[in-house]
Structures are given as C-alpha cells and as structure tokens.
Length: 448
View (cartoon, rainbow, N blue to C red):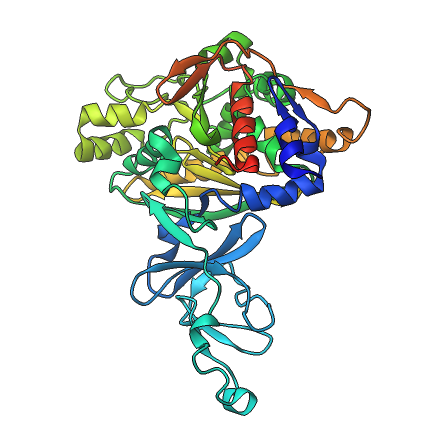
C-alpha cells in the first residue's frame, strides 16, 4: 500500500472507504500515527496515590505500567523486560518496591531503573559497567495529568496535554472533579471489560450517533415502557428501566439535543435524560435533571452548595452533556460518574474498559447508583450495549462483501453552525463522524 497516497483518498467529503475498518495494514499505521502520537488516557492519580503504587494498562496495543516512585514522581514504561522481553508485572494493580521478571529475575525499580541481575558478576564480569542506565524499563516519553486524569504519549514532541484537549474537553474533566463535595474523586467499584470482534472506530462513531438509539435499541425501549414505577421498587430495577427507556426520544428531540465537533476529532453530545416525573421539592430541583433520584440527593446538593455556593452548584449540575469523546479512544460522562476506554488490539478486535469514579465526600448511595447505571448501560447485562456490539460485528463481516467500497457519511452535511472552537449540528447529523474522520486523515497523513 502506498500509505500517503491511499490514505489521502480514503476519506472524502461525505463518504469513507471501507478499508479504514477492514485493512490490517491500515490498522498497523493507526498504531504508529494515531495511537503512537496522540495523548492517550492511562489511568487516574487515585489509582497510584502512594509511593510504590502501580497499575497496568494498555497504550494502543502495547501493555504498559504506570507507577509512583519513592520520590512521588510518576512514570510510565513498557511492561517488557530489557533482558529477554518477558512481562515484568502480571497484576492489574498493587504496591511494590521492584518489578521482578519471572523468567530470569531481573528486577526494576518503580522509576524503571534496573535494580539487580542474579549472578551478575559471574555472567557478565565488568561488561555492564557504564551500561546499567541504559538497561532499565523503556519509558514512554511523556506522562502528565489534568485534574488527576493521567495521559501518556509515545511522541517525544508535539503539543502539550492541555492544548491537545482544548477548552471544551478540559471543561468535562473540570466538571467531573467539581461534582465532588471534597474536590476529590477516585476510581472505585472495579472494572467491566468487554470485547467485540470489530474495528474500534465503530464504537467511537456509535457513541455520538443519535439516529440509532430509538431504532437499534427499540427492544430495550419496549421492555422498559410497560414497567410501572412504583414506590419501593428495587433501585437496580428502577435504574435499568429508566436508563434503557431514555432511548425512546423521537428524532426531533434528538436533533434538539445537538452534537458538537471540536478540533483534533474531539466531540460531545447534549444530554438526553428527561426530568423525573416523581414529586421533587422545589428547593431540591435545580441544576440537574433528577432522572435518577435518590433519597440522599438533597444531602448531596447541600454538600455541593456548602463548597461552591448555590449559583456555582447549579452551573455544575446543569452541565448538560452525555458523552464527551476525547479522540481517539476515551469517553467521559461525569453525570453518570463513568469513563470508557477503547483498546484496539487488532483491526477487527477491540476491548472496551468501563470504570466508575467515586465522589469523595458524597453520600454513598450516589456511588451505588453510578455502579448500577454502568451495569445497566455499558456491560454484558445491558440490553443496549449488546445491540451495539452485535451490529458492529455484523458490519465488520459484511464490509468484506460486494464491490462498492464506499460508505455514505453525508447526513446533514450542510447543517453545521460555527460555535466556539468547533461546530454545532442537529443531533442526528453525522457531523461528529466526519470530524473524527478528518482527524483520522490528519494523523495518518502526518498533519497532526
């Protein structure tokens, strides 16, 4: 494949070539030019609070370790021994002084430096003198955080994290932290990992596609519709009914919610949660939609008012977004207290990792609701997510059939309106997908 020439032709106004989803060679270039250059989310500082704390995760296809060293500094390095290449850490998280390779017991400190080699003098003599500093775990060139959310880049140069995110994306992380009465949040409640046999871009596109919910998720809507909400109903049942039922909106409502495109492929959508029809005291009904009302909601809002004041609290809870997509692979939703990360492990295989963040100082009931919301919306138990992953896999298979290589992406192509750093479009527009594809083409051609 003539990379530059072919890539330039795969994204055209209002259409894309199927090869961006199906060609393994394109996927390999994506790892180098997108996942190898962009800032990717690698964890939250709450997961590595203390010296010696570490987590293992992925950066693109690569497995990495993020650790806090004894001096408090953070480091990210490849989970690969510099001796023979075995993984030096098999655990998801923990606390340690050194990482020890299971093959020949080379050990490395939490800043990646080589700590020891068994039987070293007999095996190497003095040949390692002057080379030890070069034999530590290979680091990712850049690691930094914004409001506690850690990002790493394999590129030694390029724009800084805050410029990469931009004002409108930084706002979603600000809102996430501001929703905590203490100003602190932490990853808690475990992780849900799902795998689908399809290209990663299907999920990125789907999560801001507002035409599909009332069509693809009709079964979920139909299952929720006849369930009568009654006082004393089990919280888990009520939440599952409410969140699946939210997909019912007619197209005109989705259009009014709107989608917003931003530089570098980032984008977000308006919130689609309706107000609760349960009686809510007027003094408690402010700033948020109250759709997932809890008995401790009044106490939570009072704690926020004590920290921020009423006006600021109303602004924080009135932050009306659903998914904010940090291109290429992160979804952020402070209203639901959750994030999702996509890890493309092959051109036709993707891992989706979902986590809940806890607001320190908030009533515990709110956190329990957030866990239930994650289970109801983004897990194998979800009626909606299983629809999405099934159709992704069908698309991946069917794109290999037939002679026409082009997919239409022209819906509402002439309806973008300039707004801030980007554009606003009707909710059912394919503007966010076109924005992602422009960023894809810019990364792949070297423009980003």
